[in-house]
Image (cartoon, rainbow, N blue to C red):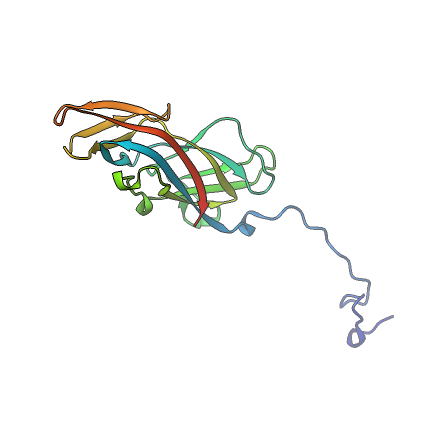
Length: 192
């Protein structure tokens, strides 16, 4: 028998052999917070200041579970208005969801102070429009919908109800007698 003072690396403090406990999947606390930037790109014709309108603007996203890789088929949306408390009283997030495959609780939060407009000088270049703080989730796709606004580049005419679901939008600016448009809308996500 091994004495407590003579413990070998193969014995525990009680003198018996060490027992190794298998651990289950990594717990929620194990996920680090990661920031992702949604970069917007489009060709602008005679408009500037393309932006989401209001705190109830819906960011439609496809989200991948960082634990098991599950990607739900349906689009999910997050808004600044919605706030759900996080487990353990660690603040809140725009959305908290439980993965249907691995049952992991994940969250995503919109960083409201990072929302920036896409301007005429940004045309045909990627620009970060918003950042998301994610725990256990990764945004992999974005579907622009209704709720965008813009203004005439020269006239300042307001275009308050723009729907970018078709990736193109056109209108006419009567103040300067010009057609206006947003074309070839695309996006990408980057880690911030």
